[in-house]
Image 1 (cartoon, rainbow, N blue to C red):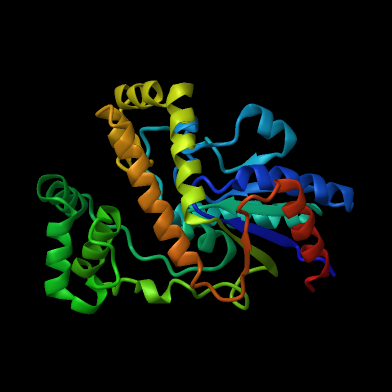
Image 2 (image 1 turned 120 degrees about the vertical axis):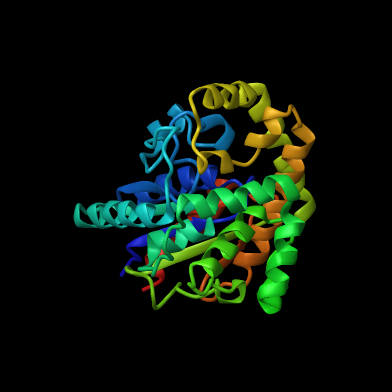
Length: 304
């Protein structure tokens, strides 16, 4: 019996969309009707398609993509809201005989799409504003030092430069809600998924990935990513939309900074996903998407 859900996860720049398109062709050849469901925290925004690497119109024509470009730029969005929508999309696809391909690089969103998670409470705006103000004034290392005083063990597991995660961790400590420990991030895959799922984690040689990221950033800039950021700023972009990789850097005209931040994020993605149990690790270095897709489609047919 074929696996009903396929998930493709991997770092920024690894080629997830190209692989999803080829996989869709392979599934159609096997009589299945695929639909892609994005698991990307920033591709949800309407107006940041270039910056977030959202599927193009031509790619939409080759494979229908859901949960992309539907949130106005001035609205905040949460993983809890995403989980509700992703569950509904996956269940609807399965009930109509389609094969969901969950595609993304945001670990929390991928987990939220595939499993029932106990989401932590949202922080009061005043607390979030206070911590983000500190992040802006003092920098991520200062927040990391604060965390080290409050929870030394947890601080050792969080990158001192990961300002977003530090803000959220300190929020949860203030709210009296135990933050999830990074070492626990590998849970919730096989037995805890809502539907049987073939999870494919895409890896790539580090040097090749960084080269691909740099080329991707250059292509985004050439396609108008900086202009997109300026339009978003003028439209009153929300706090959560500002988390898009490169948003702040392009406001400053710092393309090299955008490349470095993206490489750092990709390194954390690779480190995290290599800890996951029950996944199909797939090295894509130097391999054509069509051949990889054929292998994944065959595995999906034979998995159960």
